[in-house]
Length: 233
Image 1 (cartoon, one colour):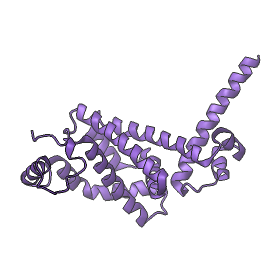
Image 2: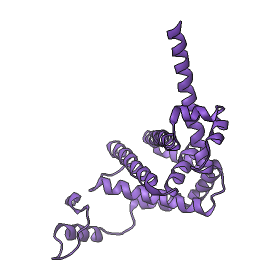
Image 3: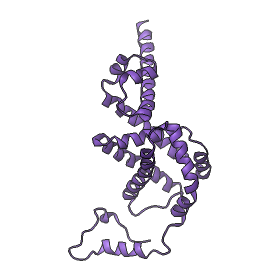
Image 4: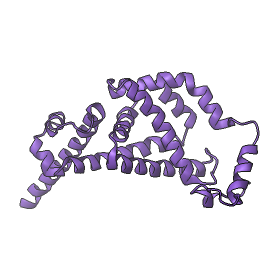
């Protein structure tokens, strides 16, 4: 009987922990990381003391929220590999479940400091994984420097959304993502053109760059990632 009771309490604790985590993700996305425990507790329908019992500190709670947000982000991105066109149309049509994930990530980056830098590095790693899956699936071309491309794509996509978010931060996550999708409806064509057909009419600038990093002039500063550059195909 004692074992059974202990097992039941463990399951209840696990359920409460997940409920607290999910409530914290929503609160952090909506109001930022200064949200007090009592607000999170009210949303999770638990006592503030139970949050302390499970997580101990705000930093520990945020770390678990970060991990869950990355798990959801990776799942959302990976799901698009099966039918990228259908998923693109779905994202353009409605915010969907990605709203909290998107706004949480923007909040995490905008908060700044060491936590934001660590969050960005983790995000780059997740983008690197998704890009590798896209390359393996034949959806994306391989890069001469996959790490540098993942870092650029992360900074570019998150930076563009962060600018839009800072211009109108008072929106709810659903409202914000809806506004982003409204804007993207007018940008879908140029985005797809750039990523599908490219911008330049020839490869002269790329070839000149590859020649430069392969044999730079004496005294020239070579980019830190030049060693990863491979010969042109």
